[in-house]
Length: 377
Image (cartoon, rainbow, N blue to C red; front, side, top):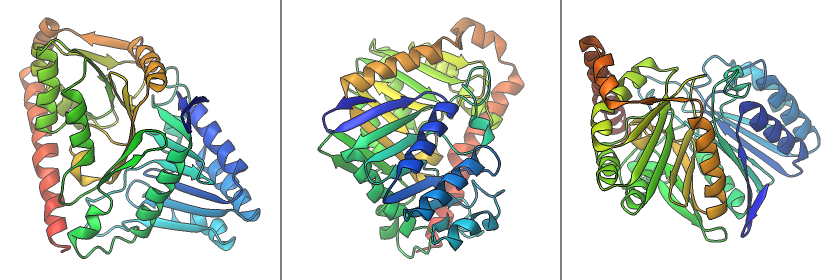
């Protein structure tokens, strides 16, 4: 694990590596374990997580688990009874209701003893087992030690308190939409959620894009807001090298179709487009010069106003150097999309499907969520 100021960091390059590190951290915890994820499935590796959480509770560690009720829909509540019997705490975020069904907690976070934290795109399910090349979905995570872990623990506590989702006013939503600085390490926590007010992830990205000399992005789901899309196009037209790695295989084909409907304009502006080939791509990562963004947020409408999400923004040359190597490794498994060939590959029906998908994600989905929010005032 590399060290920078008061914070240590270590990139988690595969599901196998991420799960091993997370399980080891839980096994080493002595005071508290805070665990939050969108998808948790029984079987491997979920059962291993349950066992190590039970062991932690048996030695007196406070254990808190927060799962999204929709993301983990297949998991029965009875799965957590052994933990509850030992005094562990488990909550479902936003128990399913037609009145607020569309509002989800998409965050992935583990904090042990307030000094070791894990962020990234990894859920807990068999899809993530493997190296992301020969087997399993390709994803990225980051292990952090030091001051930022304490700040992430506070962020977990805020989400845990909101789990039952009995919000009455928009002020309750704004609590989870914030940019929190961690001066000890010079990084920021960008916390997004539904509701009113300025969006911290969008604002931070627009600010950094306007000043970036190089842009490298890996996005599992790519349909950024119009202003952010324009910022990417503007940077490319001004001679900034903008490289995007997007999925060649996706678990959400409609989102892939929507993203591909943007290719023509991106390519015309000079953006370098690549599609990851071996497995489903689930990584979420941005590198703007020496500033790294990593966490659970995608570049899509849900992460920019519908879901609760989390990114760590960290201007750090050492972290950025390793991030560039990670980007290069992803790139080595990609097919480049060439402008002339892309225009010939696209049929009329593919173009129509892409426009329909984009309308669905950018208009219909946000409309439903806004209607649900208005009904909860």
